[in-house]
Image 1 (spheres, rainbow, N blue to C red):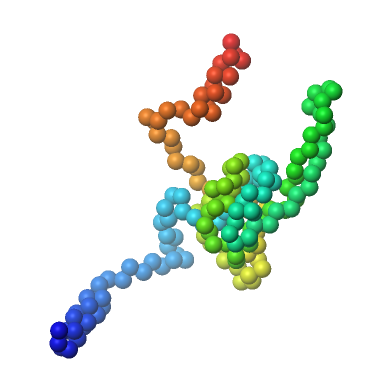
Image 2 (tube, rainbow, N blue to C red; image 1 turned 135 degrees about the vertical axis):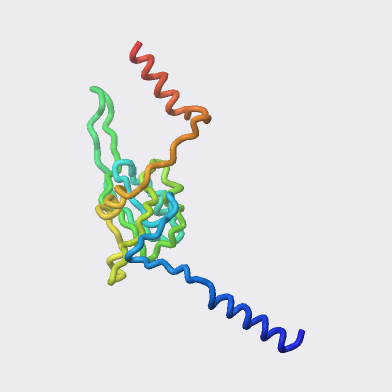
Length: 171
């Protein structure tokens, strides 16, 4: 290949790029259309959190901070024994460290963590990117509904068992 043909190919590529229309979106004025289950920020459904610490242990960045204490509950029935449970004191995620891998959402056995498609939470100070549980709870309002179940699929065994138990109670 001669020097002239390489130069011509390069100029042809440049000319095609110059004549093509730009696909720039004017972001602040025009919101982007995101996929329905896109990863933006993590929301916390605090009522489901049992302080099992799986999310914090499995996080490769160690960006989840959890503090809790034990609380003793009275016996449920007379003559029973007292029970203890963990009470959540602090749940925080440092989004300056987070790499948005989603491992914490996947390993949570009690469905306490969810992906929200919100992505506009920039801060001027990096220390403000540590979101405490109150702010993480606010993100839960932006979590989309899960996709509907396939009508041809069989009913989940948990729902079937609950329906059978309800029918026995009603009969």
